[in-house]
Image 1 (cartoon, rainbow, N blue to C red):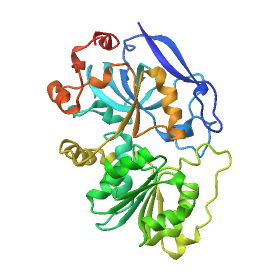
Image 2 (cartoon, rainbow, N blue to C red):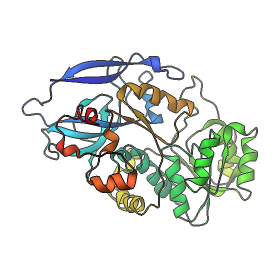
Image 3 (tube, helix red, strand yellow):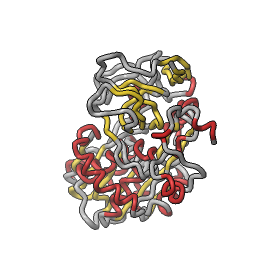
Length: 376
């Protein structure tokens, strides 16, 4: 038996989520599977905080992206995990995987929308973002939905987040002119100086979003990667070029509203022959291996910059998750389940030298991951 700390949803959420909507509980778990099980028992290492999770906090709805969380139970999200015991033929003890898990120290999963991790000479936390669902979202949304061409103009809202920072860099690799918006001076500086955007602006400081876009795109916008919705989408429609494309990834400005804002400039879609397409990353998971072939060399050749905002300890999870909806995160928001796991790597000398870790350890040699941080 082992203790199992969990993040529980107290009740369905309306309006902006609060830390008090969650509670940290500790239960016990048997570290072995029932005989004949085809499931996998995993130790969770990293958990991903993602805006879509807000839609799962409300009451069940036929229009929700995914099934609602159950009050009194651990919330669910994407995470990186190590296999403790497996009854599934595709996994064995010690394997690493990413996919949907409970917000808890240990989970039992039936691998469906899960991926085995083979490339371990990059930080494992990247599989919550750059090499996981957000990275695949950026890749599929930009390359598959937007059909970009060299020289086109690209606008990315919420551009410093897990998805936006990558869309901008993918667009630059294509030879596009890229502008992003974010909600603080620090984030705007990141866009221009870290991620290589051609320009960026703080939407909170703009009295007229349409005028801001006109200033940044005097010749109009060919591609808009939509993460915000509401007034931003309205302003973008007036600045789109003929035959422009809009990939609708998210609308974070609307997730916490009881009455969502309307969009008024819809006639622009007709006059400018704009193509607007909503998409969900699950529809493109068949292209995940193709994505890895593209992005892993980019990481190793340092063609991609990536920023994480790391919360250490499962008890910090609610604060980190709620902070997304107030713009408190800078980069991809990650929760480290047990302190010290940010040191995980297989190629230890390379990891310490390249990523600046003070220490590193081989997770395959540690039977008790809870005890490992105490050594350091």
